[in-house]
Length: 399
Ligand SMILES: Nc1nc2c(c(=O)[nH]1)N[C@H]1C(S)=C(S)[C@@H](COP(=O)(O)OP(=O)(O)OC[C@H]3O[C@@H](n4cnc5c(N)ncnc54)[C@H](O)[C@@H]3O)O[C@H]1N2
Ligand code: MOO
Image 1 (cartoon, helix red, strand yellow):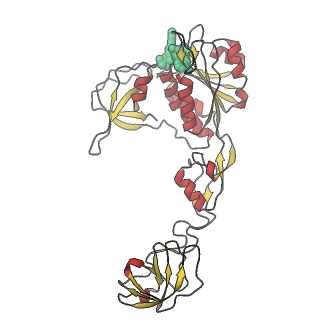
Image 2 (tube, rainbow, N blue to C red; image 1 turned 180 degrees about the horizontal axis):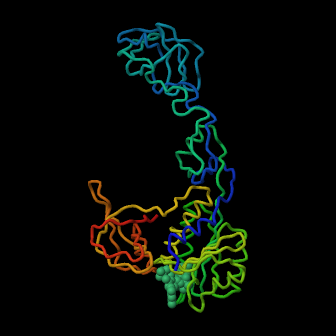
Image 3 (cartoon, rainbow, N blue to C red; image 1 turned 90 degrees about the vertical axis):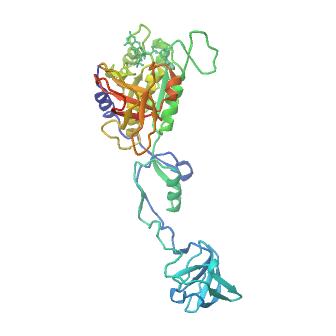
């Protein structure tokens, strides 16, 4: 059985960026930038006031000084007047700073009497002025290629004068559940039916990570039924099958894929859950065969498909799986030859201490309830020795 890190590397080397498209700013949130975002404007484009008040010269800003008010300039209505010594201009938050002025006195510190303003405090040059380009300047890099665009990036892009964004195309990933016993959620079910939780869970995960996951119709455990969906593989960036990957008489996924020309890269890895994982290439489309047990299917998706998806999106992928440090919340026995991904609770600890990772007593790979309550997977290397509570360990946080 193949080592998990080797399997991950063999999968990742077969993936590369799947292409670009242009989307409107309004549709950009959650997408991945395909080129650096360069500011087309400065922000603010001119120096503006950050308060409601009066623009004046710092040399006049002495407590008790009385200045003549030249007029007013609301935001969006700049004044052509020049502030000379002994004068000021009424303005508001966002108003352009008029020529000649180099500071703003807030209105709370001004007593107005008709055309005259008496200062109730002193001030200094630059006070309450947002200088032109203070936030960013035309030509600055606002966000690098590969960044997932969030709501704050949308604001930044808008302020930088962008209405169209170059983004990575959302990779099309077909998710194909297989099995005679599989029914759709809500469908009439007999006592021996199993609801297709797997495909819905994987589709949700992949969509949340930036893919366009396509829930394919459930295929039955026969070549004819599987062939209908396998025939669509060339339209996809990745085909993911669920179930039928093990050694049972009705596990026909691999043989049917091979009949369609699958170039098998590997089958079976030293991982729990996830032993029957399969990987190969059908023409130009990579195919990942996930185990049927839904927990195994999702754990394999996190470990193998999530980084492959990053590559399809043109994002950098660390060479090794990204794990975090934690402490064991309970003692744990010696591991066997499979790298273990143990469902556990995470308990935060105070004083900058690492969280405690406590395994659930049942680790059955069909138990979705325990899986949903788990916050992390405790990772145990093949043949890891027994450990006492409090020992350092590595975890993978669950989304
Ligand atoms: N003799 C052996 N038996 C098994 C082995 C083995 O090495 N030797 N491996 C076990 C392991 S590990 C796993 S994991 C399972 C995976 O087998 P398959 O990938 O062939 O999956 P199925 O047999 O089709 O299904 C397993 C289980 O999961 C249910 N299932 C399938 N698809 C879905 C879905 N979309 N949503 C929810 N549940 C699903 C299915 O009904 C079965 O109960 O094999 C072990 N056996
Ligand atoms: O992949 Mo299986 O879930 O190891 O039991």
